Amino acid sequence: MPVRPTAARPRTTAPLLLAALLTVSAGGALTACGSGSGSDPDTVKVSFKQSMDNSIKVTDTYLAGIKKQFEKENPGKKVELVPIKAPDSEYYTKVQQMMRSPKTAPDLVYEDTFLINSDITSGYLKPLDPYLAKWRDWDQFLDTAKAAAKGEDGKTYGVPDGTDTRGLWFDKGVFEKAGLPADWQPKTWDEVLSAARTIKKKVPGVTPLNVYTGKPAGEAATMQGFEMLLYGTGDGTADPLYDTATKKWITAGRGFKDALRFVETVYQEKLGPDVSDALDPNFSTAVRGELLPKGKLGIDLDGSWLPQDWLKGSGHEWPEWSSRLGLAAMPTQDGRAPGKVSMSGGWTWSIPAKAGNPDLAFKFIETMQTAANARKWYIANSGIAVRKDVAEDPAYTKAQPGIKFFTDLVASTHYRPAYPAYPKVSTAIQEAMEGVTTGDMSVDKAASGYDEALKTATNNQVIEK
Figure 1 (tube, helix red, strand yellow):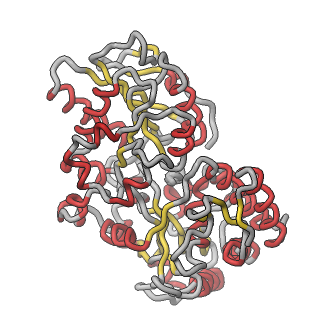
Figure 2 (figure 1 turned 90 degrees about the vertical axis):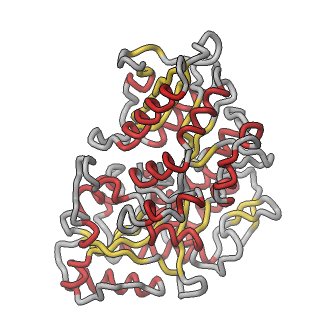
Figure 3 (figure 1 turned 135 degrees about the vertical axis):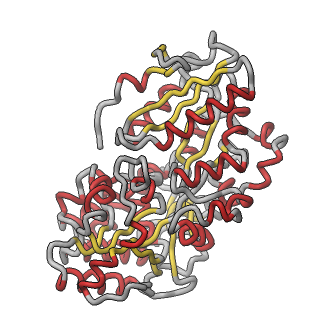
């Protein structure tokens, strides 16, 4: 499941449902959630994020199938699925609360790479290296994906179940009305803004360009929006947020301000959605469920997972999407090599440090992550393969339009410096974006505010730009 924020993927603020505190037994009855001391040694409890959209059951359906397979292959063993239906921020908080005690810790938990290092530092997760050393399939996983689940101590704390990439989705019908090319592939930021200005002028009633922004969008603003800009401002040889040599965070320099200026331009020139819509925490749902399918959005800077919402059985079926939408890589600021930018995140399956049945939990991971089951998951979830054998499998590459495009972006992708301070750094970025989006702050003032927040978040471990 991608960052969607997290996942990295955009994932409403609402109270946690009581069901988040419960587990579902094989017979469907509800029982109190608990693991650790006194738990059934033959039952593995698997906690995961359930979609806020009741019509989207991709994860539930997949895990139900794995549960059935696991119980068949391991007579006498049972799987209890522990869905947590909540927005990302509340999911993270709930999982962390559960992992603090052996009485409530699940045996297996779905971890966003956005927070994995923070949870490692807090002592919530168990290193998996002893299991991975004996698991042949681990050699099939891409090194970049493995790195996303590593702690600063060099140990691995999760098994990634896919990644994601990001690019520009554009409406071919809107482009035709605007006189723009159907094979549009912008080479610079200016070309993206030029296309948006043309749409605004020639296709009234359509939002020219969506760039997620502000605190309500959370990590979607940071990752789909700001970092897709920031990581295209330099020469690509160094991380613009964090210096690995000194282990210090980098204050707002020219590239940071240029990225803010792009966001400011989108919203002050009214090339983007109305500010009130952009700052609605449900806006990403509107983009996928209404604006794109109804031809009301020209260009969307977004993730590889969007088709998940449009596939048969999703509740938002849109079979025409592959003919109605085009795909383009997000260009670097001025076309500098490699010419395009992507950001990647993803989720991992991790074992809490206080899990009662860690061995059984890893056995469940092995079942989930066979080549066949991994391929099934990538296709169902519109995810990007992190197993080399699956990435080369025609059954995967031809399964859905766009998969090859987004898989090829892995070669020019970047990963967030998801160290323990990153969640606070991300919030500071969102605040800076929101300031220039609303017009309440100039670029310089927003950048200065970011610098102050960065110093606080990192205990002044910064490099001045």
